[in-house]
Image (cartoon, rainbow, N blue to C red; front, side):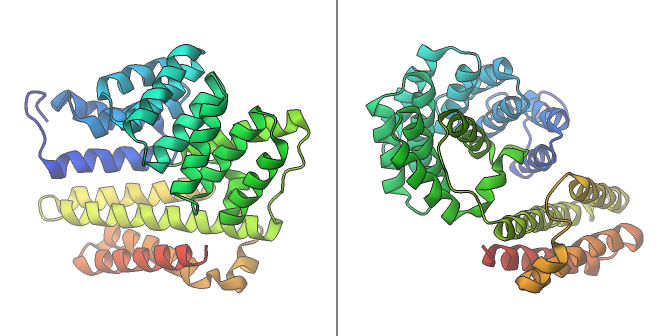
Length: 328
């Protein structure tokens, strides 16, 4: 694509979707390459700049993350990434100032409030961090991340009873939090940071926080894997379908790459393999078979072409995603 031609919306969405898929597989440099191509054509593309900043942060490159976040401007997601990058660079005063700006800009946004609370707790701490964490819980009481941040702030303030209650509630809402430190990608970037930090702080304080039920943890890991496979298959099928009329050969090649990406995802270390059969007996049989069917149908399109394998792959992906989510 020429560097002086801005991409249309569908092309820009394609770059963002491919970058997101690559990031969720932990392939940050390849995802950054997709975003760089988009930004070269449209330097002021805020979503691409924000995602670029988050990818650099996930790849433990805070200086590059800070540069991208500053270029993205004063939108809340970019400011949140800026704050975390400043924390990683140990620029505490600037991080606290960024958190204050987030609080001012989005007083009614639960994501902004909990993010600012987390940044403040690591940079300045005090009542402002606790107030923001409580505000996030009030705005979104069913989001486990809000309770996770409240626990994080409470531990740093040595409010251990509050920290334990908040962490128990976060685990009740989402048992997967017990394994959040193993996540990759950018979709759960903050969640991963919060979980890792809270685990470290509670260990230092010898805080008897709740631990997840092993059975629920296995089921949650399998469900998360199914959601990832279903999401990847659905996005890949839609992109393949959009590419097919103009270039059938290229679309079939992309389908092969998508199947390879799923195979890589399945090979990643996880706790799901030993308990797969038992989890299916507990109600995950439909999403397991639907996710497998989506991948097989996508591979079938790569081998023989035609619209029906793609239609089947999209349908199976939707069924897998909805039924896996319903098991939460």
